[in-house]
Length: 397
Figure (cartoon, rainbow, N blue to C red):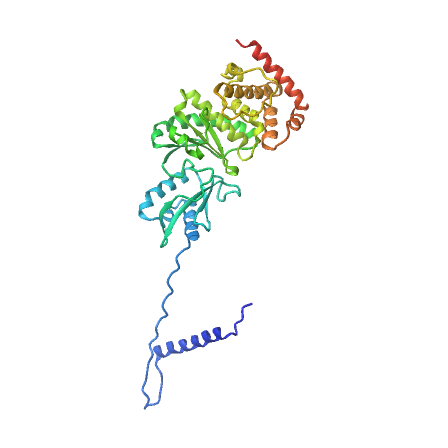
């Protein structure tokens, strides 16, 4: 408990009594002897303390709160005029994505912006990007390059220069150069999402909404660190419990059907593995189930996979090597596609997808998942499907 008997407190107490007395005199006067002059001391209000300026953390907390509740004026309040347009665009982008944000100021001046799309509070493992706003006299006057950008940077939306369109189940963002593709892509992506929702239900991983970003060739090489491979036309970027983004390069796709299949494939990854960390060794199943989903309602034998298929000795092939060529990639994807199609053919779609869920989402071994769902060890499933695939290769025209 604080000591209230010290001299500092007593002095303040006495001073308060004197002030109260003086105020009373100034209002009512003093009665004195007739020969005594009357001296009135006017009451003077104590000067108000200067308002404290918010720290950078407080300023950014208020700004994050404004964005999260949709308050554009509050979001722009601490922003210098030169940055207003950029921040206004960023507000529009984050609101279009239904984002929730939070800021943390580090000792070196960098700022971590945490973001998610899951509700009023972000999960612990939500994605983060680094910023370095320059704050002077309570205003954000400039944006410098952060000392250590995160592996996710640049995200598609952080410059605030995208345009957005919303469908029933999908939000699509694109640079202005691809604005004329938005209507087409939203329609195709909504068709794809209707299929992917079925498989998200199998995986017990239902999605509140899907996000797709369209990239030009230049942006394709820069977004999310520019990690996209040369042979890819789309990819899924995991964001932990915040879900996953899908990025597609439409200039590499020659028809609406191909574009829908790629979107459906990538959203298939979102449906089956977003929110969990898969093992590299499971690439055959990760890509196989995404191909199976992406080509729906067609089965593997009715797709390009039949032409790319090669004889195999096992279902769980090793992952693709770095620098793999187009034929090697096509054969790998085709084999994974037929592996999943075989599971569906022999055991039914619901049981095949439960095997996928146990392996990819819960981390069961292949044998444990097979025994649990199919009632037999994986080696028997593997032998039966390898034989099934080999017969298809032999009879291929």
